[in-house]
Image (cartoon, rainbow, N blue to C red):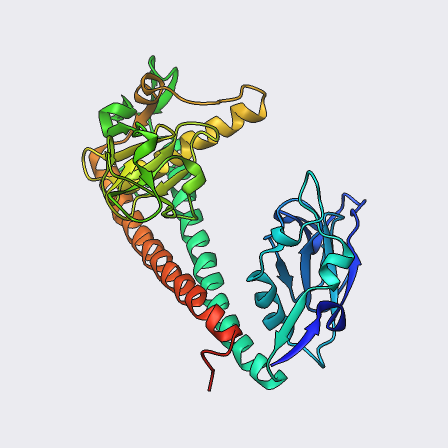
Length: 383
């Protein structure tokens, strides 16, 4: 291992705000990640993006042309001495908060970064480790992209069938054409105050779903050592699809079952995850499952309600929380059983693929994070 200062490996430069409002193909990164896409770039070589202030552990990497705002530094990397991706992961392992020079908001100066000691193996070893880490990360990225597309397909289908009412009309006169567009009969529903397809009904959420409102156990029962039952307090525990286990409780109160929809009932109202094990839920969450086994339909019903909450938030009617009564009384147009079954058959297949890839990603992330420190200190080698 050879020891360097970070200044021997990279040249650190200030990001700056992008003034243009024009859309484009180049990403703009901030301390929280991707902000927007613009029509010009600041730098076009592989670079590690280092936080200047705020959340110091959010180190990012880009190997495409990009722009970065003034809360980030970007780096010109001497690739004759160090592999960029290897150094990215090396820095991610550091506790930058311990190096912070900020008295209020955590911050890092040029001097604080330049002085960081970096121990490196030979460049060829760095590249082998980098190839392994890239392969894992690219598989995770691919799974996420496929999952996002599958979810978008299920959501679009829900919108066509149950919001626009353009489901395939299976009647002899309909011949599979879009129901409403092709003149399917619509009936005014006084509860919903709008027209819905003939044969449909109005239902409340409590009529189609079993709903459990969370209740937080005594704070003295919380622990991070794995004693008792997994406990999720609110949406801060949420991941892309499954929550991250941070706490346990030895005095569980309200429980969710494996496969339940976990719904955030406090700001932001409407965020969702799926419980991948039986767990205790706190007052920031509710757990839902379908009374008829149509969990795929129920999931996208809640996605639809989330759109409504978000729209009201954007209009200035902020939802800080939603009560049990409000949640139970949410109303929807409820389809005929044959259409519901047809939708659920399609979406169940989508969801199965999403769940499998999400579970694979959890395993890949755990493997990567377990290997990472051993790869960096030479305990594990890559042939």
